[in-house]
Image 1: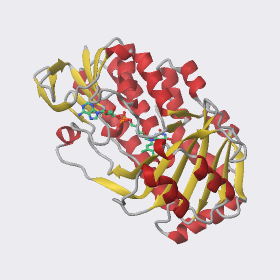
Image 2 (image 1 turned 90 degrees about the vertical axis):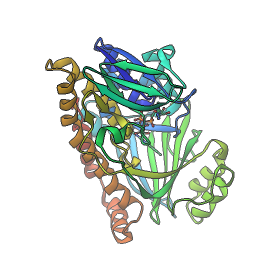
Image 3 (image 1 turned 135 degrees about the vertical axis):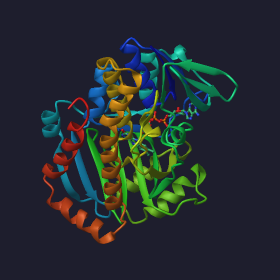
Image 4 (image 1 turned 120 degrees about the vertical axis):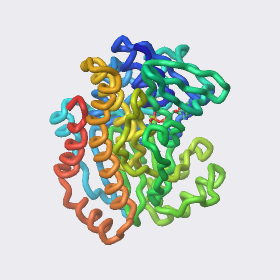
Length: 385
Ligand code: FAD
């Protein structure tokens, strides 16, 4: 059996590794000549970690991850602790820990595990078609490739999605802008083993440790789309949006490198009922584009890869049948993640400021139990429990 994988991001490479491990011949085609991930880092929650373990990257992942032992929310103006608790009860209950990692390290780990030289870069797919017992992909440069099945892991702007689902999707603006990057660890900003978040005014500022003595930072601000802001204006923009916020936030803004700070208008896509057409399956953001508010988009792509390999390996009624079973297992799960993230997004970013203020008040009462129970539910809903 031979599979074509379109896209060499988190989803495509996880899928290619999973299929290869099942003995399926794979060809990976990536549009760009050199992958430059859009964000600086990513938190891989235990459901995603279990998938990477399953794919054979257990040891490598631990070398990339930062020690996420505590979680804390702080008041934006006075830097007062609203809540702080250990993540250990979560780790013990789900049987794995989370690892925040720099995206460049994650991308390298996936490429090295699959085989960097086996990825065909600079190959942008423009169309797919199916025939009696196979699929054909056509690329911008006129090249064509044929296989028994095709995995479309070409991201949120997928060129293949509409062919699979039969209509064009609209991306929905989630109402806020996210700036993110990496800074050197600094105890005067926040403890090096903690996910620290300052909240207020429907905005947030967060720090998470990753390997290499670095914090992954991000700032969220509810804003209209299309503002004339870029890297050159980033520091001044953040100083303006976070005027009056506590000292560590001001210090962080002073310490960031604007030229490596990403600015992203956050979108999602209405959950899809269909992920499969015949021998073609959507995977990762191509099939479910979510806001990052519960940190699950990349984890869900890893889950897709594991379920895809499991269904192809364990079913013998043919490729179409196995892909439909993949769809059956994944569609409800990813819909749940997208909608959970959207709900969290609205509360965090002041869609209804009364609700957001009630959440701030709740944080002062939070012992960790409620937050960890929510995380646990999301994590154990993954394919590896
Ligand atoms: P992509 O990473 O978009 O990869 C798609 C690949 O396909 C790209 O390399 C692209 O060049 C290629 N491609 C595109 N079109 C074509 C074509 N026509 N032909 C060939 N190749 C093509 N997730 C988490 O799990 N935890 C987090 O903490 C987290 N934080 C996030 C923070 C932010 C600010 C954002 C924006 C997202 C975050 N996510 C997080 C989500 C995560 O980044 C995505 O879900 C994940 O990158 C999706 O991977 P993918 O491989 O499906 O898509």
